[in-house]
Length: 241
Image (cartoon, rainbow, N blue to C red):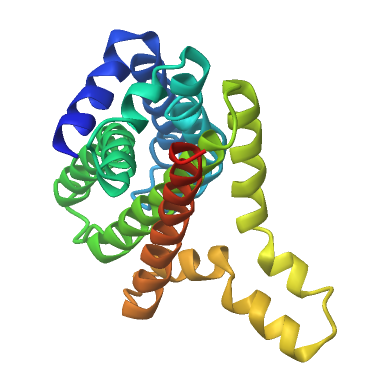
């Protein structure tokens, strides 16, 4: 797993993908910081996280589109499929590599927060930076990003076309966030409860309020495990076919 993770992580920087991803992430996050905080003289980063949430829905599929699809296209997956590496090690290594790239991008939010906190403390107004709200948003966006990554890797394992993988992942991300809206049109109580239980956006919003719920954390971790498990099953079927 470690070897695969290191190889995949390095591959993001032997091609323009890793640099482009981080540049776009930093560019948009900096733009939203200026729009919602600096220009408005506000230290509340909630709007920055909200905007970045929607950017991530599109940006992360671009990060994950090549994880499995490119190996299939170049036929290099045959070597991996016949090697003694476990399916868990293969999927976990690719997931962690993409996750660490994502985390490098998300870490800029902490730098922004430190800058805003220093500005608030030096303002002399007696105001205090809302660290609880910041960490709630940060944990929420990291968990949500991890779900997007695992979903993107799963979609990538289904095709050898990177563009199809990216578009399919964007579609899955949007669908995950639409359960709240879909439930409003469902009249069957049992089905409505199931859809509400699968609601991603509502559970994410609780983090943005600074509410750390173990139930919600386990929900996001479960989604990550499910998508990675499905990826393992796809690879296993190809290994024995």
